[in-house]
Image (cartoon, rainbow, N blue to C red; front, side, top):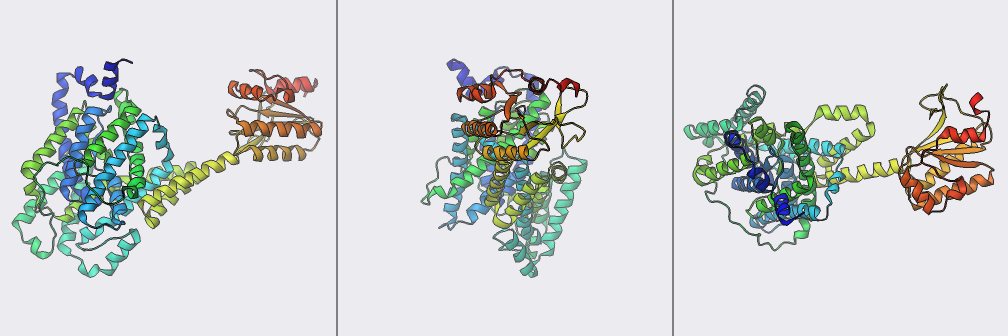
Length: 563
C-alpha cells in the first residue's frame, strides 16, 4: 500500500469526499439540522448524568461529530454523549474523593482522552477482538441495569427532591426518606414532558420532540411564576466555544484507567453493532479497524475540549438515517448547528426546567431495557439468561463499572466451564447407512458390540484434556461387552494442543494395556499435522484426510456389512 492509499485509509473523508454527489448535499443538510435538533437536548441532559455543566455535553457532541466526519467509515453513525456511558462516568467519578469540582471536570475529560488512547492502541496493536470480551448477554444485562440505574437517578429531579446521591438502592431510600420535599409543579411538568415525548415517539417520530418540549417549557417558565413554586431551572450556560488542551490535574489518573477501558469496550461494541447494521442496510463497506481510529479521535477531541467520554448513539444514529443522511457530512452540519446554539442561543436555555431534562433522559433510556431480547435469550439458553440477569443485578447492587466487570468475569467462567466439560457423545450406527449419530439424541441408533465410537464436541486442549481422557476411559469400562476397538471421531474437535496430544498418548497407552485398538476418524488437516509432529501416529496408524468411522469398522469386523 503506497503513501496515498495509507492517507486515504486513515482519512476516509478523502475517499468519499472525492466522489461526493451534489445531489447528496440537500439530504445531508436536512439530516444535519434534524440531528442537531435531537442532539442538543440529549447532550445537555446527559451532561447532567455525568454531573457536569450543560455546555460540556454540547462540547462533547460537537467535537465528536467533527472528528467522526474525518475519520469514520459509517455514513449514518452519530457520535456524541450516550446515556449508558454518561451514567457510568458520573457514578464512577462521583465515588472518588476529589478536592474540587474543577478536578472532577478535569478527570472526566482525562477519562475521555484515555478512552480514545485505548481505541487507538487497539488499532495499532490490531486488538479489536478485545471488544468481544463483552458477550451479548452481558451487554444486554448491563444496559438493562444501567436503564434502571438512570431512571432512579432522574426520579429526584422529576419529584423536585434535592440532594440525592449514592448507589441505586441508596437513591431509592433517599427518595422515600425525603418525600416530604415532593414538588407537585415539578412533577406535573416532568410527567407532561414524558407523555408528550412518548406520543411524539409513537405518532410523529420524525419530529424533534425533545427540542419542541425544551422550547415550550422555557416559554412556560418565562411567562409564569413556577420558579417561585420550587421548579428548578438549568441556569446560565457558557456562551464560549471550548478551549483546547489536556486538563491540568493533580490526581493520579490511574484511578480512572479501568473506567476508560470499560468506556472503550462499551462504545466500540455498541458502535460496531450500529455501523454493521447500516452497512448491510445501505450496502456499503465499513472498516472495523478504522472505526477504532474514529472512536479514538472522537474521544480525544471531546476530552481536549472539556468534554467527557462519548460513543455512537443508537437513537440519534437511527434518526440520522431516517432523515436521509448520505454521508458523515450530516454530522458536520449538526456540529455547526450546535456551535451556533453555544455562541448565540445558549442564553435562552437559562429557564429550562431540570424536570424536563429528567423527562428527556427517562424516555431516552426506555430502549436500554430490551425485554423481548431478554425473553428470547431465556428461551434459547437458560445459562446465558442467568449471566444477563446476574450482570443486571450486579449493576444495581455493586455499581455500574463493577457490574459489567462481574458480568465479563462470569461469562469467562462459563466459557471455561464449557471448555473444561465438553459434551462427549457415544455414537451408534444410523439404520441402513454407514453414518453414525449420537445415541443420546437418537436412541434408535445401534452400537456394535466390542466397538465404542466416541465424539468430543469441543477443543481437546489443556483445560479439557484430563476430563476428556477420564470420561472416555470410564465409558470403555461401562460397556456391556469388552471394548476391542475405540474410535475417536474428531469431526467436532478442530483444535488440539500439546496437553491434548499428551492426553491422547496416555489414553492410547492405557488402551494398549486393555488390549484395545484406538483409531481416529474425521481428523482435520491442522490436527493431523500436529499429531504427526508429536509422533503419535505409531499409536493409531497413518492419519488420512478422508478416513471415516465405517472404514475402521470394516477392517476390524468383516461381518459389519451384514449387521
